[in-house]
Image (cartoon, rainbow over all chains, first blue to last red; front, side, top):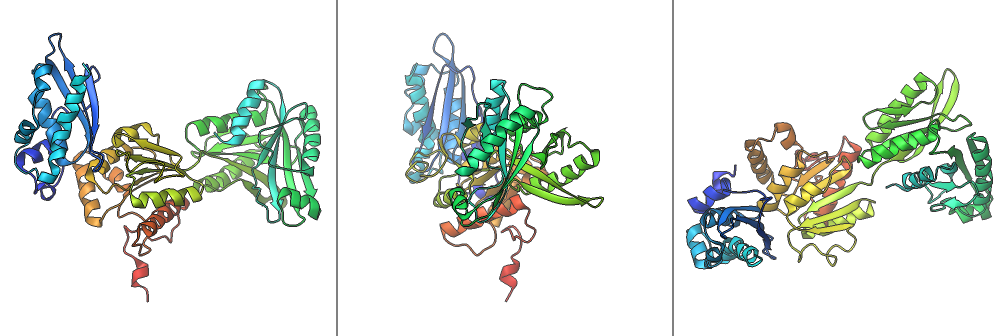
Length: 127
Length: 367
């Protein structure tokens, strides 16, 4: 587990989801997936979703080699889109994502928080 | 695949006997190494790269045809004049010893073929072995792998056991092919130990400045180099012109795909939890011969603690070398890279006197 000291700069939400990410791991029966990367810092995340016949996201999972903010954002996003129709999920705005992640995201790290959302959008655009 | 084993496969597939000529010794300052080989088909045509050049070829080919016909191995000992020596790359006259033996992959009773078949299986599994040959007309051969498992015999149980002891020592330090001489009951014996191992590979996670120098030094030492990073801007041909492979992707998934054997040396240079932890989760349980991570003592302790809390055993976590490299007072990226590559060699050679960064530095304490 990540030591308390290392998590001090982050909010309790980020720390919790980085330490115990929800829905982490591959999704073999995915209907859509995409991989996103921050070319400068190297954060890399793959987001995958499974949908039912009505286009509702029944399962969302992610794999990430990324910083605490990015991992937490991906974890929170999997919970946010569960049960959401894919067309609605595509409309989630960056601002909402930042609100979900909560306080503790420095301005310079906004991209870390929105990378999973950008990746989800690209995955859903392939449907 | 090693050249000799690749060519063995081709010869075995042909179902026809061929002669294998192996340079077992060369006296003189030669660039040719013991273990260099040339295959000769029944019609006298050489197969693969000819490592024994010039006028010696003719003598080897002539002898090879006789060996194929008789099945009796032969040791050619050739003294060279200055002119002949020059052709071979020797700076002055000397001597080359070439063992010529018949290898028939289609003959199940062929001891040489059985030994090379065993060595090939070990090699394909990522392991090293030696094929031991008499340096005379005896046809018996013995293949010995790193675990001490053997295929074949040298004809006498005590000799097999002696060969196993010697092979174990040679394999432990990755010694190249060569002759071993020893005395038994007053009789001097010579055996040729042919070292057959996959190339050593340094896999670098994190295409940093230090990584660029590690890749260059490792390459210079004859190791394969593989670069892994999530960023194309960092892991590319421009920065790593000599790398054997560059992979851009999810480092932890690439770590799953890149098979790590004892001859694989894993170096983590991202200096970032986001790559270090996911990659370590994959490589700590692998067979990698070396796992080192750049970072301070404190950072190393923190990462070890995290991994132990995740369920990794103390033994697994203890495999991680951090701080990385030998203690040489390295400051610049190139110096740190040199310390890392030196530590890899020290680990491979089991050099007892080497001082890892993980130990208090005796050098610093000396006047």
